[in-house]
Structures are given as C-alpha cells and as structure tokens.
Length: 136
Image (cartoon, rainbow, N blue to C red; front, side, top):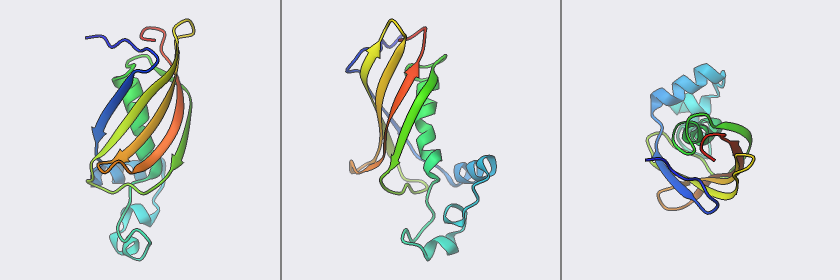
C-alpha cells in the first residue's frame, strides 16, 4: 500500500542497536572512542557503561526516509541533530517523524525528527528537509 505524504502525517519506527552495530559503525566511521567500545573505560565515565555513537543513532532517520517513508528515491537536503541524552546498546527506542510542511510541487517535506526512549525521554531531536519526486 502506497503511503500518501501530506502535512500532518506522522510515522513511528521502533529500533535498537546491537554490539555488532556499534563495532561496525566504529569501523566504517573511524570513531573508535573507547566510550563506545571499551566497557572498562566506559565504567569510569558519567554513563557507567558503553554508549551508542550519536551519529549512528541519527542514522535511523536516513534509514526510514530512504527505505520506508517516503521511501525509495528520497534524498536528504538537510538535517539538524541535537543530542539530548545517551543511547545504550540493546535498548529499544522510537524514532518519530512529523511531516510539518509538504510541498507537492517541489516534492519536498520538512520533517521534525525525534528519537525517544520507551519512557518518552527525548534522546535526539532535529529537523530534516527531504525530497522525493515520486512520493511527495
């Protein structure tokens, strides 16, 4: 079923990250900060355990835009991110997408993006501008 993107459309996506995800992101990004990879190091930090890379968390927005809503053919024009709290390995989170402005002529959408934990604490918030000539 094709989803019609209009102003006011909202979408939720539940996800979590595994240790393999963290290690893989560290390899791809080159970010080998021990706060992400070394439990003994992380125990000595304010978090007391390893945390997910912030940009790995934010990458969920790209996944959803490019594969689910609007889906194939979507390109990013911009994305802001504000990191409000840490994400932890193996914990479930919800990515929220609020399509606040849709321009069907330019095939663009302004989207408020947010990641929350299961208690509705905001972990990442931002705003995206995406374009898809076939689905917006």
